[in-house]
Image 1 (cartoon, rainbow, N blue to C red):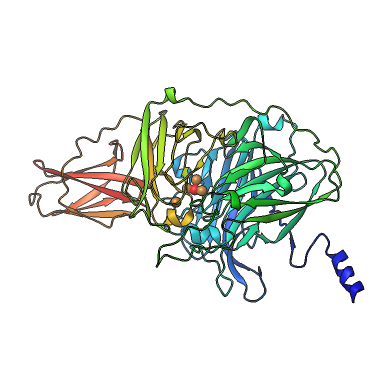
Image 2 (cartoon, protein in one colour):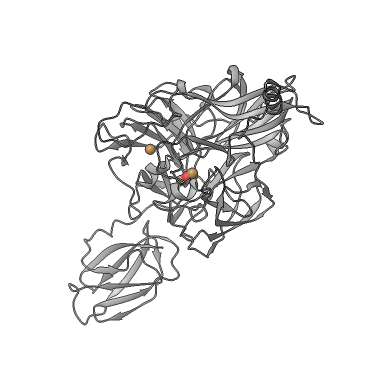
Length: 565
Ligand code: C2O
Ligand code: CU
Ligand code: CU
């Protein structure tokens, strides 16, 4: 009896029963990328299989895309999920029409083909849908993947970069499954942590310097990443690029959407086991992942068993060195100069609010507004350098994410950010009762037809409307003549290929004229036809975006806004 027991222990000394080898997603590289998003299923746990979304041959999550800075790339996203979706390249600095926001819908069975030049620096990005009100359910079911950009500056550094050998994609998601093993996109009792879609994962890494590309792709949870016994590591890159020099640390917080590249020195540890962990006990209350807040009666259940505790995420079994191992860490990386506050020519202030101070599950607002596809919150002149000052007046922390730009954190409540928060970022966690200021330059893409988004990256908050939109205007606005109240009906709105405008106030039997303006007042040519007091415009050639139409009978004119989808 004792012997059998010992034998079992011996067999499973490194792998306990129920552990799974870490899945390393396949890769796509080059300049043409074909992604087919489809419905699939995975046997995560005994019993009922779990319905998932996968990309290409993957049953859950997608391949890792490798792009090179300066390349012209063409991506085709084919939607086979049985529902409308979009695909957003999180962190990529691309024109709004290529960004995959809520306006770039891909109907089921259709494809979308953005093409752009990769302008980003080498770093770890990711892709996921951005479908209005459905981002959580689509991303959490597995419609997401990592996107790695390489460039010449990174290539010149002696860093580990052999994918799956000494350079590892680590996509971490905490999820909740219901009693029949199906994803609960809005569940707040997440108890399962998947790494690259693997439950209870282990991986073997060589006894040398290895690179971990950490991505928090969770809907809600913030992780306080570290390793067993507070082993130190070097942070080399934040969201959007390498730091000027590695930062030595024992912890890195990542809220949903954030990435970090870290170097871990495993030299001399062949045969040992360590864990990537989350030190959740060190997170403050109010940050999802820290201790559960005492709840007022009637609140939804939010007491995940992972809250406020330290737990293992990934077992790392250290194995023999590879050939040509990286065994030292460079002292400097890529120079990068942050913008300073004195360079700013505008400041925008956003207050994160809720209906009352007690609200813990939303809806949450920006400046008391929910997202409205018809409202452009900010019109930003091209090349502006702006300070955005974000205050969280709610009980819970919110990861604030900007599309288009990369920013530098200036301060938190007036204090310089931690060294681990230096460098280019596109998500910043704003804690309850905290003000975070960051600075960004809105360069390269002035495009008035499609807005960019900014939002909370807690996916349920985003889906519930904690989102706003801005456009970057390539020329000064001139919409001041578009001020008359509207007194005609326009339908449908949003419009498709045609829009009908009817008026009872304009004079009968007069020739009506119309003009269509883009969001900043530039006139766009639109053909149409008048029938009595009705005008039917052909909008099939308009790009997706917001427009104004002005109709007049020679003496009075009226203006209305419409959106082209
Ligand atoms: Cu990762 Cu607007 O999102
Ligand atoms: Cu994004
Ligand atoms: Cu939020």
